[in-house]
Image (cartoon, rainbow, N blue to C red):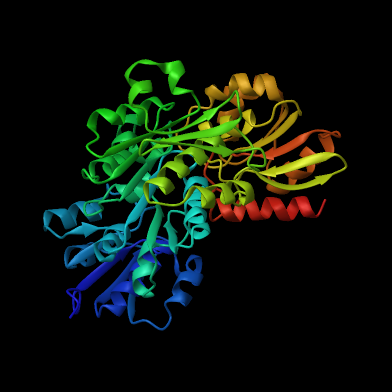
Length: 460
């Protein structure tokens, strides 16, 4: 009998994660109530997906009594943990948990967990493809779009779980003990939620704290915040870097275990389990130096889990990238269009701009600000952007930070941004959507934003 049978479960937030929790708890025989500040008209898809389940809804508001009389509260990642309602529940000693916590408590298979500021989705996808190429089944989920709890509810069976985890998803993590923990990088992001950089880093570090001595911990030597994690790591350490360890020298070179990109040979060099391997990147399709970092991280995780080198090379040769991440859309009249809608922070925009060497760039940026500092973009905008087109809630703030360093236009609509970019372009130009902001001021999520950009581009 399920320990949740007959229990009053409150699901706070009714996005993908909330729907997964509602389904799981209903199957467990729990008495499920869903609450969300959004109105039912804004949650039609989610409500319809749970139409066959016996669920109580409190939408467009939160009810203090419901929070205080529940047996368990499950908070969705997008819901801040600091609120009057959750504080009242804490005073009553009502346990508060997350979808990820429910999932990992029920999952028996090894988990490869990937977190960081940028590169999470690409790295997670690469790892999943490497398992697949090696003849193993992998459930790829978490922040990448498929809730981990769906794996449990649907009774799926896989050899391994590959989970992308955001800082929001890690805030309530207690039970997770990953077989492999990958940290891609850490730069300023989500300051509107976490308050400051150190709180953000602390949330990410929860994954490190969840590792035991049998866990492989994959760290980015080139990311200072991540590199410092080595001091608190008790797991088996693997590094990835764009630097030859011999150029770093010292103890790092002597004890190096992991993967690095050799700029001289243009190959990925891997040293794990005392064995040296070389991977050919001559037909690796992903733009940008940052994708070599993502690949190196993925190789470390895959090899740690026993994936064969031949399978890894197969993925290197065939992987085309993920949607909305520096995704090539089309070439029209000599102009190249790229969709980087998943570029929702400043570091991501920096990496995307740095991916192009010679072509002039028309950058479309803006959206909902996350209390970001856009000043670090100045040098790259000076060097690479012929035109800036800014939109959304953050356009004025971005304009104040970098608008003086390029020909700049502030527009009111997405349609206007795309049309103006095309009108101002010349053959050889790159039109790049890399917002540096969240999408919630104009779109449901970054996928909807990217899909709309692709639609507008296809209609030119």
